[in-house]
Image 1 (cartoon, rainbow, N blue to C red):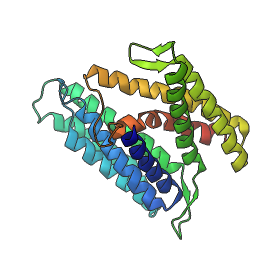
Image 2: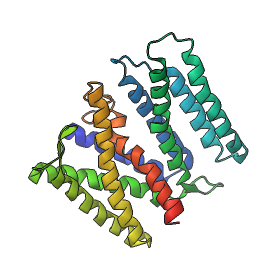
Image 3: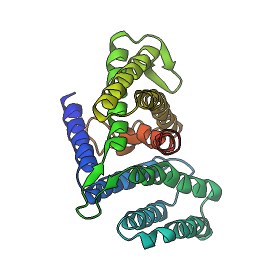
Image 4: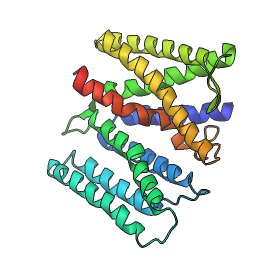
Length: 271
């Protein structure tokens, strides 16, 4: 428990500092998390008949992310990001011709799925950050920070409530330890957290209540999706890089599913 608590503390501290300080620090930290999560995603299939293009997938992801990040400072690059992404996605299919592996289309599908699962949400997360182009200090971090705060509230209280009074299984086939009591406790804590954030940021109470409900519900679903993936490949954790927690993907699986939904709501519904 102490190992888990210490690891969790430094992980959360790193995330918070990356979100509230300089834009380049934000991009580096989340770029590293994205690459590590993608590598873990591919590694999960190591013991199966599917053999994704690990090097190609990671390289493509890194190239797209670096170009996308640099376009924040040199906007002229932005028009090349989509074009190069299409070229790299096509290259993944072409490279499979020369690998002579079994299940080639599964290999292509998992390789590309990994990019959509890890790269796309992190790109959208970058778009939710505003910064001063002169000093590079982040000037508007609440849209991003609130996502993490609310998911941490939900996860923490879902665990505590579920451990204390959890009896009714939420999805026993996938995750025997999750309970409806824990799920409800996590959602209530997320709603309270959302209302507190709205109060201190002068934002809409409705907006953050909706965010809290969606983050709690979709975050739980994201955990279940990754649990389903790990069960399908007979893996306990996605990795071992975080002592007491498993892998990076184990820690950000819910976030990756949540980000596209919150991005859409924040920019097209509550804007």
